[in-house]
Length: 226
Picture 1: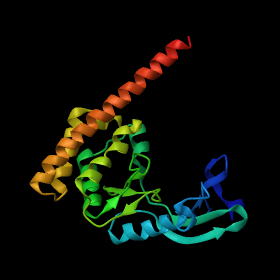
Picture 2: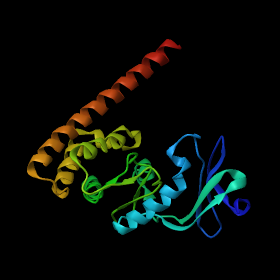
Picture 3: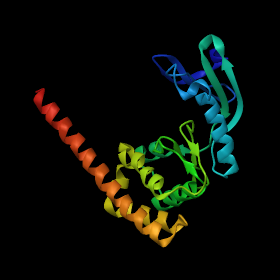
Picture 4: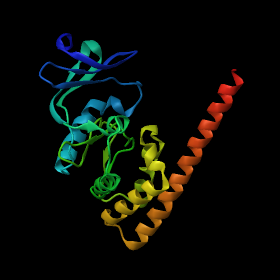
């Protein structure tokens, strides 16, 4: 099957993502460690279950066509129809505009429905052709009892704030608009909203300090090599 496919991504262990002439995407999953939860719940199976769960929550995502095992390659394979649109990271890199308030409302809706995507960043959020957003690369996602608590909601801001491609979100005015739009759509109690707002700004300050520290360390290292 891979002989006729166009390889989109590979690593030292082989092909990770490929596309068939029909447009169907093949995503190959390997077990990274022998002793891990992937032994009884493979990452490919999680991907499929998450796609089904997101569809039930009416969250746009990929449409799974098949899930099978490739013993000779030691891989589980998911065949799916890609989600139409433009990856958020690519849109920003190309100078495109993003409605941050709309993205905040999308994130609030995910949390209201119990969707906890630990690695939510600009590489797995898709800007849909007709407006709105969807999710891809969904193996690292959990569907929990809704809604999410304040701690998980706040923690979920971390990968967005650490994503260098989303640096505009670290501007105080943009982040302020983002948080207020989120709070307006989250459906939290007034007390939870106040706590979330406070913790969100604390997360923003912490991520900004870490990024500044990393940049300073990089500059010192570069200076030391001259």
